[in-house]
Amino acid sequence: METLLELLHSPWPWYVSGPIIGFMVPLLLLVGNRSFGISQNLEHLCAISQPRIVHIRFFKYDWRPSLWSLIFATGVPIGGWLAGVVFTNPQPIELSSAAIQQFSAWGLKDMTLLNPPELFSFSWGSIPLLIISGILIGFGTRYASGCTSGHAITGISTFQIQSVYAVIGIFAGGMLASHWIVPLLLSWQ
Image 1 (cartoon, rainbow, N blue to C red):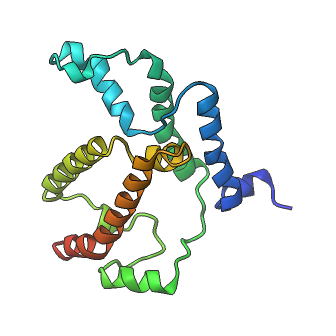
Image 2: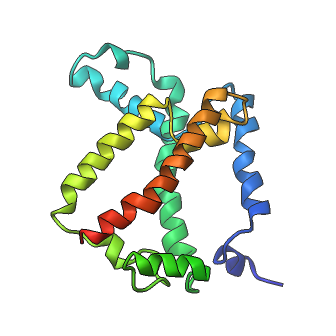
Image 3: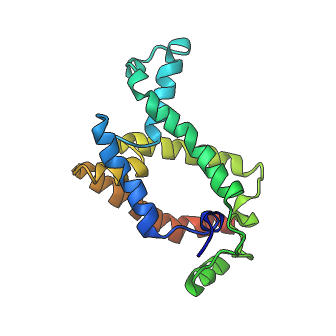
């Protein structure tokens, strides 16, 4: 039998992690919240700082009932750090041969790394791309009234049809980007 430490250092199966994520929906409904997502926290941060910056009517609302969401958002990077540093899996990443061929065609050399240097190396030329990408993501999440986690986890499970449309659009955009935009960007390096 595996020890608890070995279990924490190995990937969790879908039948464990899926229900844990799914448990958030009834928990949120019990406490009176129907929305769950990360992008909404950016709006709350703007509402918190808005009186000190510029008076924009959109941000004039009481953000205090959403304090739990801000606390949750601070836990995301902490959880990422725990998963990536404390409970990291020392085994190399296992990819299918089709994925390895696709990444090789894109110019990625070492597919055993979680963050290949071809994708995660810094260059000053990438700053405009990062700024434009951030603006597009910010506009997209605002236009779609939320992010992937909000629409996919709570929107669909609370039968909101706009969340179904948003998730279809998000995944279609991701597939299009992975087939046409990512190879184009990698060819510019």
